[in-house]
Image 1: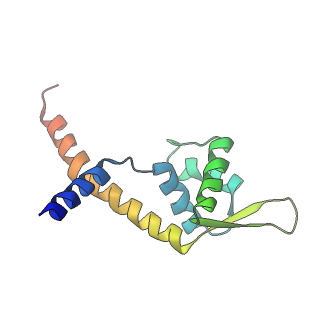
Image 2 (image 1 turned 90 degrees about the vertical axis):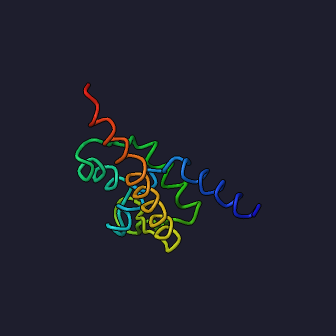
Length: 124
């Protein structure tokens, strides 16, 4: 019985953890566009996100380093032309992206949709 209660508690805690949207955006775009450079990624984000989201270069490159340190992406230094790093998603990155996607879908279904329904029903 105690194990069942602690599992429910863990599920509740997990469901309230913030969804790492920045991480999801970068992983999804790196997965969709293998060998993308940081500069290309910085320019692609606003196009894909209808100009609603932009990242400054400091945010972008620190997150890319973090993703690489976590083993979610790998990179190679370009050997020709300008020094550029090209990023690829790893298998661990794909699994993480799949998990983040499931979290997002769950929150839309069980939290955001019901909240929108309540707000829409109000006479405000």
